[in-house]
Image 1 (spheres, rainbow, N blue to C red):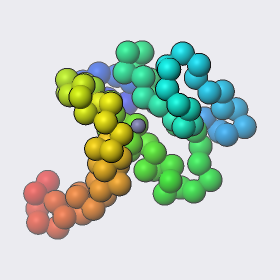
Image 2: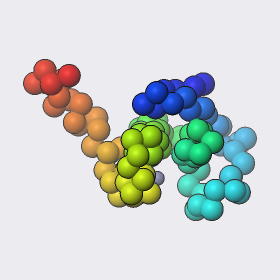
Image 3: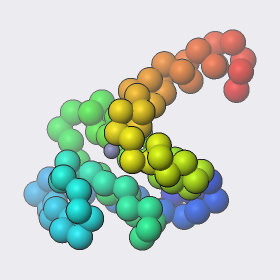
Length: 101
Ligand SMILES: [Zn+2]
C-alpha cells in the first residue's frame, strides 16, 4: 500500500517473517524494518506481538516524517524517533482528552 508522508507518497510494506529478505544496500543494521526516504519506502517485518508491530510501524513512519520535514539531524536519531513511537499514543490520548485535536 501507499501512505502519505507530508505530501510524499511512500510504499509501505509489511512482510511476513517467512518471506523476509534483509535489505543489503542500506548500510544499516538489520532490525527487520527500515525507512528508505530516498526510494520512498518503509518496510516492516511482521511481528508476533501486535503492539510491538504497531510501535515498529510508528517508529519507521516517524523517521519518514523527520526526513520529509527536512529535519535530517533527527531523521538519523534513533532515540528521539523511538521516543515518538513509544509516546505518541499517550500524547494523542491527552490531546484528545483536552480537545487539542
Ligand atoms: Zn530507527
